[in-house]
Length: 217
Image 1 (tube, helix red, strand yellow):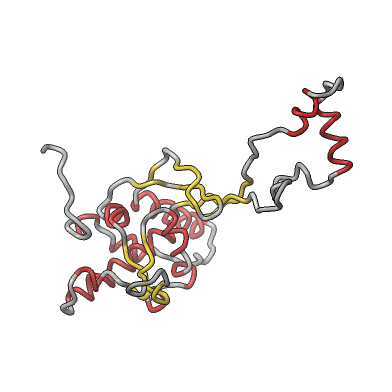
Image 2 (tube, rainbow, N blue to C red):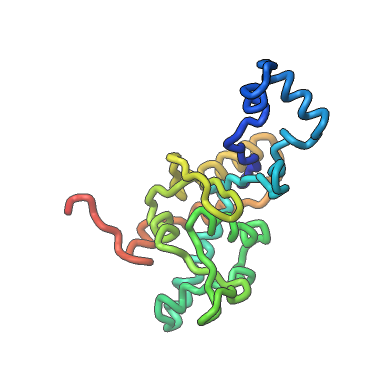
């Protein structure tokens, strides 16, 4: 599961406010009365005042995000080998990548995690259709560095950054463990990405997207 849904809590407890201004101090009783009169008041899905969506999304770094990064990085390297400079090489048309649709559809999640970014048409805010680049954080992840494991988004803006971090190797291990468990149960593994696990070596990406700084200096 790479995306979870929650609802933004309001800053005001209307039932408690009513209780403060009335003789009736039973907040839950007041809440029940208000719910009877206004059935959707405390549902949380929409703002009771303006009707705006209060839905939040938690985007999670999973195996498919890791595979997307590796597939994009391989494409960048191949484009550089053909003579393109890094900036041009790092403009990947994701729909053409030799991987599954599920992986290609991870671009939005990867972008919310700060791993990839849209490539924009020059002089505009419009994306070049299907074209994405790996960010410095994305290259850091490829180099084996720890990056945020999840982020919460509300109304297209980052609402909360969590302390939990992850590496590509850890994300791949989750997938490898699932495949091994499926094989033990004599089940055909679904979407087996072990090829990427076997090929992945953090040292291959040192120097891409900037240089890794050692800890001694």
